[in-house]
Length: 606
Image 1: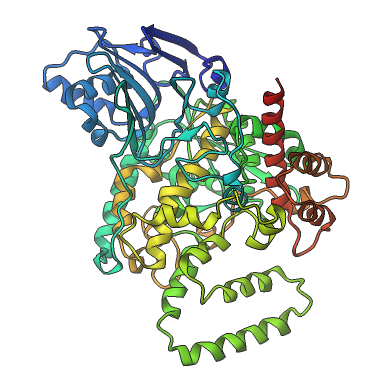
Image 2: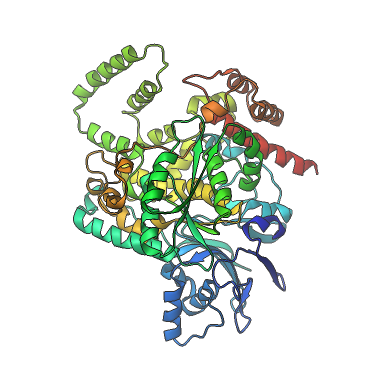
């Protein structure tokens, strides 16, 4: 199992076995390079810990524990977790600021205590199989132990819709994810029990804070402190730098907190309107960073998809894995740790979907007698503007217009990165064993106190999209190159602050990320503040829609052989030519799906 995860920890390994308990670990040395080896055993031999992640406030917690009379043998954050558990039990989690997935064997209680950090920066997979409880940072560790890679047909609609699966689900029947913000205990006679220790705050719109100046002051102080804590390392630290506000703000704070030049990396695309290298260079020049940028071409998609599929273990539909994988590779040549701008859009209301939901909230106040003629007039204007269906901006406006009378779940489903409902129906052919993607959304947002669109969107992004899409992508792509990624915007203090702030403050009118613009943003070059929103996506329309695309042809054959997809639907995908309605992203998703299915078939045959 540990050998399957060498890429996550190339600096060392260790195993602990006692009776029917065995813990294994692969180490990427970041803190206390000399004495931080794992599994870490307590001085009295009664507790053993294996741990992936970083406890950023370990120095402060260690001082607190020392004041309570505790002695430490090492300078590692690993020992702090063990002693904090011994002092406070499972309540220790509320004191931690960091990212973690760990398992702690408590010999006295004969109990395994497992936990995943609040936002899900670090993964935790587990399986109940062959009268055993098995766990690991990636599913491949479970497969190495013999857990069957049996596809869960029920998940097909969800994986094709979202491009990933919400916790606790995975693509395989025997494997589960520990949800973010949860801990789990495993004990003979009591089985496996999962408890939630943290949930992203969710309130009714009228209960949210509107004191803008105070919010901005608190945010700036917390953000600066978050970056300071995440610079703690005994190895070199750098940053991913795009042309956006979030990563530039991280670099600005790093430059202020560090006496050394910051190492920064950027990826560009050719050909693409998403190339942000010029803006990134502007930021690098402003803060005098040691900057590297690299241009990616079409050949990277076909070269990397099999490597990416191996690292993810299940289908993953986000095509920004390609640049994230490559920028991680480049960064590892300079540093061992990077800070990233991930999470900024979620906490600061930075997505176009936030604007759409705010527009929807205004639309609901328009009298119904006026709505219908307004919609008819808008539909006519859009038809005249683009009667041949060739302009993507107009097509996007049509889709928005079509959703104005839909409920929130339907709007959210239609905005996912995967295939549309019609495309999924064509592919799945009405398979009664498949669970509708809509049910996963309804299940995920059920605990939210908010009932308005913006509140529900925020809850979904924090509870589902962040841990299982964005942070999963960053973890797999960075750890594929033995690189640790840290995310300052997702310090839980920042998340808790901004989750309780009204959209009037976070997004006055339709101005996204106003809190950031009026704080850290003041230090940034002016062109970044006026640049439009761009995603970190490779130009898959150019890369995956050519007639000679071997990636798609091989994938289609594998999907046909599985018997899970309707031939007519697959034929439709194959026949599509490049154009405004091309399905390059769908082809990527289906190719990833085909690779995972082929691996499952290979293991079953073996």
